[in-house]
Image (cartoon, rainbow, N blue to C red; front, side, top):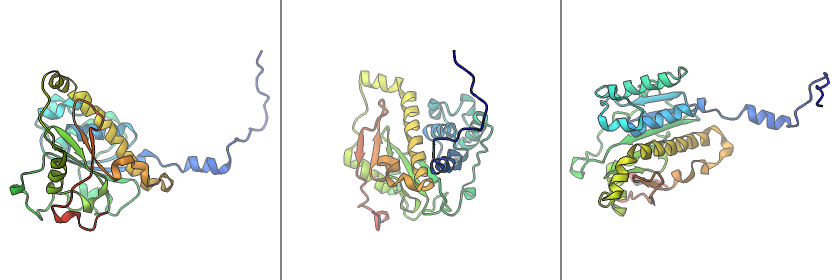
Length: 268
């Protein structure tokens, strides 16, 4: 028969003081600050996943209205159609976690480069070459050029996740077109594959959002924990990755082509 423990002085932990200290100093997800620029359905789902991982400092920005195409991931609701994406997403995030106070103000994002800061930019298809205006100011021109950037681009039904680079080295439309052109997106699915693609569109977007949330957290961890090493964000620092429905795994790892414009000069 088990006996009750004998009262007495508390037993010391078997873990040494160094281990206890390291546990106390371990980085927390609420130390991460994420600036999201562009809030289509996938980017909004990414924000929700980051919140559920414990990231509370979310700066979400996109005044464009919610469309029916944004509803697939569940971040937006049918009643949100026509409302500004940033307003609808702020409301959704507050509903999910009362501790979260999301804002839509890039100027409030940490100006200097601080540990745990990450920028996520989500863009639609790159404009045609004759519409690209070199030197055109972006609406988010105040972002510190050293902030790490996770850049997402859509074209031909696929998603291109650009390698993680400083904001100053973000890809231009010419770079994105050249990189996609090197592999070609090919014709859309036909027959049963087309049906599966339509059926699984929501699951595909949600699965990709989960993967991207882990990648964003890994990028933030590199600067929060010096011991994590430069490889903490996996392949994101070296290669572009192509996602194509219906399967959520990457379909290709690409070498970015930055040879057709000046923005690739002096980059590693």
